[in-house]
Length: 412
Image (cartoon, rainbow, N blue to C red; front, top):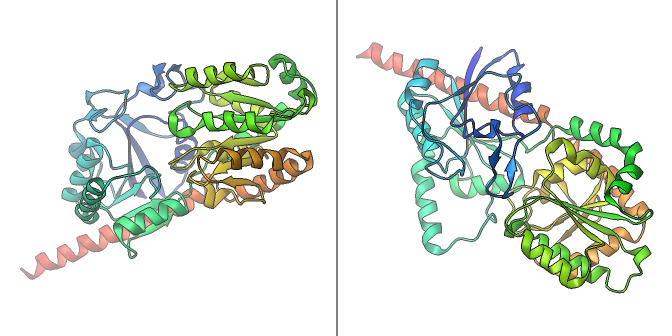
């Protein structure tokens, strides 16, 4: 049985269902090493700006350990959370492979060095892309230098999608080992919960105080600058400028964060508080009824590494509208097929796309069905297939390395 260690900063709601499935694989003995347990309690999320307590199990179904801490989180940054004992834990575990989520932390760099000294192959996964945020020449030079130094420490990388693959090929070279492990969510959960919510759509409409017969646009993300919710508000105002009330869709904004005050002020200035509703932060189990309720889901972000909410709402069978800087777009959204794609920051184009989607309810329904079919190819089962292939290759590399070392020693 292959012994695998997975190092993460903290328990993450999106990761836990995947880890449960991986732990159930008979060929893998998985140990998840966490640097912090802060997400198991209520904590103040830096992006949402409000206390968050996840309402889904984060540790059930797999073996997890918490490393001894020097600095705990949140907020999460290069030095926080900070652990010690990584080398000794990896040595004691006699692991065949180490899987790392991210490289931009002191814990990750400690683990890379420890694995190198112990002869443990490392698989690296991040959601980085070449468009995730702009960098100047000095930062680009430094990053290229960093990856030249990093290459010998990495056996292979796990790619979450097309944009991520391009990132790894750019920084690690065309011959680097890249294993497909697409970003996925628990499709069954979101599809089943949305289906269960469907008979209660009108009750939800009444609870929100919305008039019957009007379409619903949904945004659900942190209210931070790069998510560009304010662009959606402006596009909505442009789209509805000359529409009678009965023909105007509602815009529901789910989330919280530093941009909320500015968004509220713009809505008030436009006198649109009746049509645009801010619903605040909603936990994960509260989202499927809203996904089922909407006609189209919009994520107009800039420099968005992926956008897992798109996976979720596609599993619920809805049309999606994204900017061309949302990382999942090349993999999940084709303009005119299961949604629309617009240039990031182009408010008139965003308004026009809303019009094209909402002018006929049949358009959104047909696109939503194509979303459902497409997301069926982005599942935890696909992730495990890619990951097990990477694990097996890494384990063989380790065995061959040890065998070669033994042969060299026998000739001395």
